[in-house]
Length: 399
Image (cartoon, rainbow, N blue to C red; front, side, top):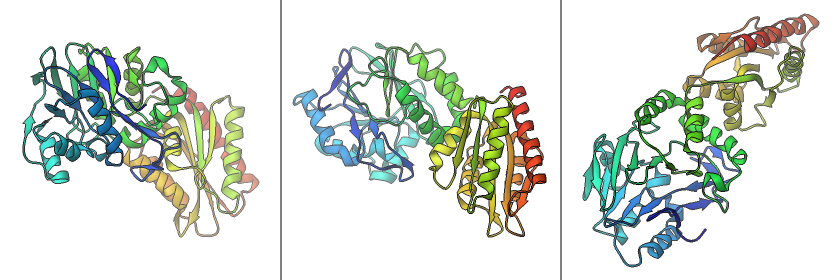
């Protein structure tokens, strides 16, 4: 897609697909790539909404040149200063030195800190508007969704919400860019993984933003990643509402680490008993083989979370420790949690796992089962008891 694509009259997508980057933020795998969405409004005042990552600046500038045909850009609206969206700001200023940057007070400080930009900045506050000629842009401050300066821009004539990272997701736009041109089943997993790994910690702020936008007549949502929602913007609003409310579905994810097979044997036993107790949606992950981003995504979705660890250097197995740390940091709730594991002699890993479960804002299910060496018949009986209790709690616990 080497040319601008019209969204409505005089409003264009000028984004770039990135299929080369292996890890988003040098952390999260991108098996299906990612799009950096930027938008342009061609009115009496030509306005650019966000930019793209510095690695794709050249084709981005080519799209802009094709669209404006020798005219200059009057405004550059910055909804979010993260470098995958602000990385081409200096290139825009170099090409269009009289462009005026629109942002809020916190944007101003980021511009100085990241790029040394201190001039031609137009500061807006919540509810402020700028006139482009045939339309006005209104600004809604949405702090900590998911950086301090984040805001959204609303085209009052067309009902378009330029939402920044909110309502976005991983995945390139392969031919189609609109929700009605795409098979959304292919995008749901990547939208969820994007949310649970990057934005989930700030779910209360997402809820506050949704409340602020509840009275706005939104006809199209243009996020900085993923599809443009023109056919059914309510779909992605509802999806984000469920994610940020930490709603869970009936099911269980069993996540374990195992060095020599003992904890793995216990994990398989738990999964079988859950199935026997009528739990249909069950996923089992080996934390040593499955990337953290997928562990977190499944843990966020399913109501039951059963975690198993061997003891490693008197503590949790490192991949499990990393997973637990992430869950703690993202403040997971509305789950049923059970824990188990094994040790060679002195233990310690399962104790730390139990402490996490008891501290969490979740329903902790006993008994805690720790085998010394291979699980004995007694260990397996207690494991069955724990799994049955988890299954009952999954069915009883409404979130």
